[in-house]
Amino acid sequence: MSDRLAVLPQYVIPKQALTALAGRIASARGGHLTTRLIEWFVRRYGVNMAEAANPDPASYPTFNEFFTRALKQGARPLARADLICPVDGAISQFGLIEQDQIFQAKGHSYSTAALVGGDTALAARFQNGSFATLYLSPKDYHRIHMPCDGRLTRMIYVPGALFSVNPTTARGVPGLFARNERVVCVFESARGPFVLVLVGATIVGSMATAWHGVVNPPRSRAVREWRYDETPLLLAQGQEMGRFLLGSTVVMLFPKGPVQFNPAWAPGGAIQLGEEMASQR
Image (tube, rainbow, N blue to C red; front, side, top):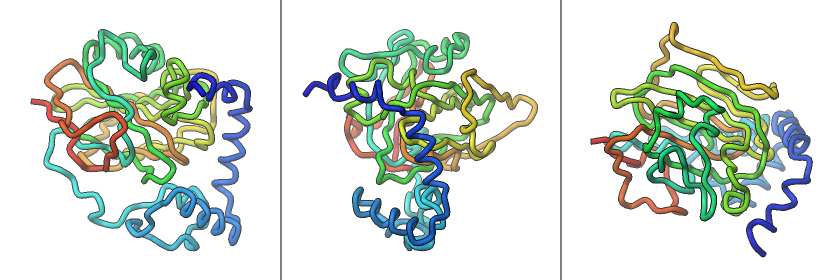
């Protein structure tokens, strides 16, 4: 079956309703039922609880608290690198932005302006720059950390669809990451601006940032924006900046310049938080 045929049901299923239902279940304090759900999930997806700060499934009062669990101290040492990987997961794609086009999968690309919610001035800062798209599977650690030191300047909530973001859907849905609901976080660093985009998906109940808390819900039909020019928010390399309540994808944008990605990286390869991602020299 082709990827386009495989994703056809996603165009008709009630994705918003399923996501709202998943959010309610994930936040419910269901006692023994919650524990059974967590234990099933651990078995089904092969979650490594040995590296969790709290490895006991029965100790989590909600599924969300399990899903956004912390890691043991020292579980992810930080590499000495200009840019470190911000998540556990897999590499979807990475490389150069061609003018304003980001490669999604064979036959599919999308524009930087579409990704950041239509802000052409912001998108222009990444013309011919570099990008990385990182997929978090259900078994992964679902907190997002800073790839380098940065000062937050803006956060933009962009409403959108809620397609799955798994590899099959990325190959089958045109412009997927610029169609789905997302939170765009804009930073300034010693080497220029960069953007972290948290992309929502089917049954991703919500996305949260360290400085704001839960961004969605509420879900609106309009773009919402927060500016931090008057309130400097500085985050250090490796510091937590956000989390997914159920899994999804992070898209990173860097301006034109000498970004040299880790030579060991390849699309589909596994990655870990804290490993070397790239140099900027």
